[in-house]
Image (cartoon, rainbow, N blue to C red; front, side, top):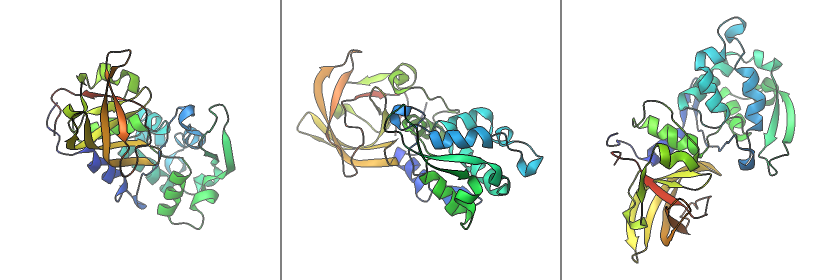
Length: 279
């Protein structure tokens, strides 16, 4: 636990502006993807990575699973992959484009109904994406079609690794986060500091900056997260004290104003702080 040299918005920019450097070029990871079917699911990724991970490099070399690591592939599959894992996957595909002609996938939309998969089209990866496109454009199109992306847990957890607070990935579901990682409760919005996390039952975001208190029970802040629209910074949002606790005894806050790029999740939240972690 230590002083952070980077803020969450730096991580947003790393992922998106300009993006992740791979052999195809610099590719923005600008999509939200979540295993949870009520959050859209990962059906496109599911159709790809279960096959691609066992493909051999050059036809007789080591598998992608061996090169990137089984756990790392699992995390990318569910929307919590490390940046370097995405780069390894993309580089592997670009080296093995001919083999992608034999890899059939389903291109799926986000689920509206958790029980209903929405298949838009099917085909092999080469013809759908790499044929008549640059490698960079092919990967960007696959990101648009939900083969790759990052969810809220993946964003916050990978930020903590990227900025050096964690030596390895330790994500847990948002409802368990306070018990494992950020254990100090924040009682009032005007006590919020950069790097505090905001928690909902099924979502997590992180405070990037605190601008100013307002009227004694509100505060203007920037918030970073990955949600609808992918990794993002919601600037000048206003949180307000509700002056009530939830069933776990946490003081609850209201999203009084969702910011200039509106925060996608608007329900009441609470805030927690990690001991010894500060800007």
